[in-house]
Length: 113
Image (cartoon, rainbow, N blue to C red; front, side):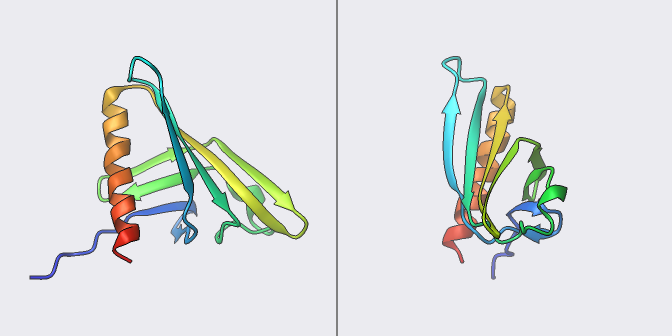
């Protein structure tokens, strides 16, 4: 029996998955409860000079639902979006565990393509 492929994606434009793969750095406080993941996309595919002003959130979508952040910084160079840096933060062990489930699914989706 073939396994059903679940949809895992990162979106800036709702309904349109970002095809570029981010550089991701994670940081956790010493107490282990709070932390953040910083996503850096170089030349993102779904953000353009025409739509960049409407980009307000980054959505992390998987079978459990969606996580989102409003912390997004865009770097524009000439006629294109050079870089997008987005930070997803958590404030509890439960939020961290949910984030890690998404991260594992996202990583697995990249290796299965």
